[in-house]
Image (cartoon, rainbow, N blue to C red; front, side, top):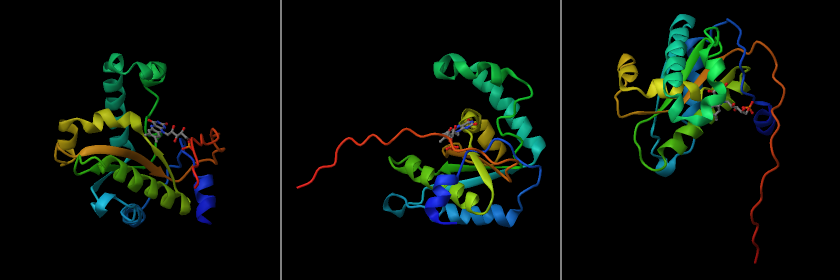
Length: 188
Ligand SMILES: Cc1cc2nc3c(=O)[nH]c(=O)nc-3n(C[C@H](O)[C@H](O)[C@H](O)COP(=O)(O)O)c2cc1C
């Protein structure tokens, strides 16, 4: 696949086949993620993987409860209230795996660097016929020190990108984009 074609055709996928992704494939995607650029080549990222539908469903239930509990702090999330209250809604869309990109440091560029690593992983996955979706809904839960402790992750690491990963169950239509807002193009 041409790189530009991969960029154009990648989609956030919300329906996954039950087929698991093997460990070598996930490992290969993490190896691709670290090829992302970073400020001063600091490479401030670290990764965690959660596999298994049962464990992910449990995390989803806890993430939804936390989001509902904190709803008043995040008024923009009000429109998701009903879906988050639905016991059948899995924020991880029954994907077989979740890859979490953490920032090791909170230097000014660390979140940007880790986001680039996440997007590199997303594109690499797409190039191999896999699908991803960045799950912002998972962030408040994964950021809790006690949840980091469950995974053996130091409290000072910051969750940047929870990415579900799996084989897509269906093709997804392109999501429209606004035309780029070109603010200036100075010459001379
Ligand atoms: C920071 C971030 C957080 C996101 N959180 C969620 C989420 O919690 N649940 C979800 O279904 N999609 C989530 N998405 C996916 C976006 O909704 C999706 O990328 C966007 O609608 C554009 O669609 P596309 O990726 O198919 O082009 C998130 C994407 C980003 C970049």
